[in-house]
Image (cartoon, rainbow, N blue to C red; front, side):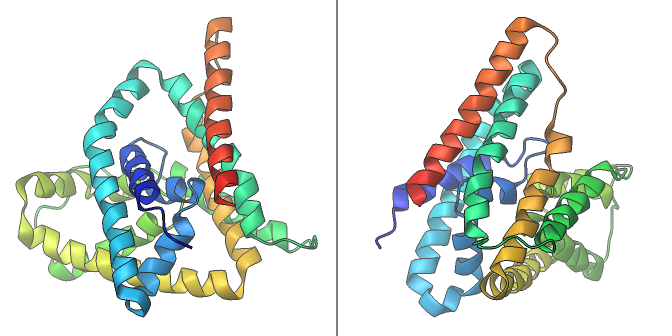
Length: 267
């Protein structure tokens, strides 16, 4: 089946645009948009079909970069002005993606063991989101080995849905230093960190691809748990007035309906 390259670029645009929104991870958005599996396979089995995988990843990366440039600031502005409405939209998007993820899990018979994976995934991300962040000053002169190891850890957060990379960097006391190093293009810091991230992405995607092939039910339920586990951090509270309730419910339905429609077209 011929790839829809424009759709891949647009999905990258959505993932990139929402990555900087607190409580929304790039992995979650990729899963919600139905492109997560293809990303994992393209990275893990890159050399099996280099031309097609390279084109897919390039278009997705271009879309992601464009999304960060075009939509990150407007989304953050909307998050400051209309936090309830925007966050309820994302909650609706997560809810709308649930049938698609359950379908991918290929559950043909109910077993008491299957919900365990859902609960484990949910609990892991929910507990992660309440861990205290470190003082965000950042170490000024960390060694290369430390940066490579930190990149490995950050890569897991990049690949797995539900885990915010920004919050992980705060926990490791690296957020400010990473942002400053990117803004100054400070290569002695960025190169070992980037090497660790690249190595971590390759290792994590290899493990995930194998798990998806050999244990699809358990893996997709675990991933669904990761995505649902981000909801407590994403939840902004309940509206306090009738107009707010109407706007939030409309936003919830809009987010859920849009993702449900998109996922039904992918089927």
